[in-house]
Amino acid sequence: MLNYKNRIVFTGGTGRFGKIFKEKEKDTKFKFYFPSRRELDILKVNSIKRYLTRIKPKYLIHLAGLSRPMSIHNKKIDQSIDKNIIGTATITKMCYELKIKLIYVSTCYVYPGIKGNYSELSPLKPINNYAWSKLGGECAVMLYKNSLILRTSVTEKPFVHKGAFNDFKTNFIFHEDLVPKILKVINQKGIINIGGKSQSVYNFVKKHNPKIKKFSARKILGKNAPLNISMNINKFRKLIND
Image (cartoon, one colour):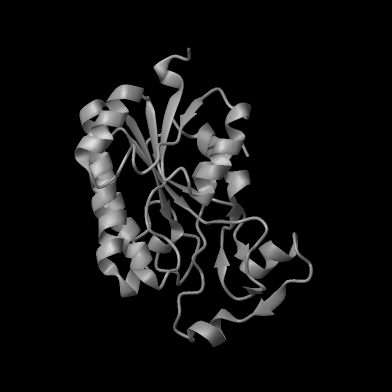
């Protein structure tokens, strides 16, 4: 039986990101646990405490929450608040009480998206309600010093859309490429920008799909839309010796 120090509990383990972690477990030194919502409900203190007390993990990677479609964060803000803010705060309180290292997966969208190359110390101004809900979760996590916030720019492989923006810049990386890198920084604390090379979405996608169509974010989202959400990931690269 593995020592508890090798155990990681994942909330939201049935989502697309959690499924990739599950596939990669055999290549790691860790033992992964993916509780169902029935086993661990992020909105119920007793549910969280009961499961974590039984498993006794050293780490908890918090993936559970509300993400897509982005419009749901405008239409149903109660769900956005419950799942991304209150749920994260409840998870944080239980990790604090049980002395479990907490890793919270946030988003690059907490940055303003105007100039790009944002560092972990750059001022924040979320670009949409989804990002505000993720920043709300960050606020709770930051109170707990045995924690790590990962601001990510991650997407599915293959890219799910028929076209990609040629004038929207970010740090896209595929889920399966990001998973092993997250495990490399799992013992860090604070905030880390984590992703791939800063480039347009179109340039990222066309390397894997030469037939991808080119779309203009400026035409679709408007000339005042935030179009450069790229992050400075030098800290991340140094930590993984990239």
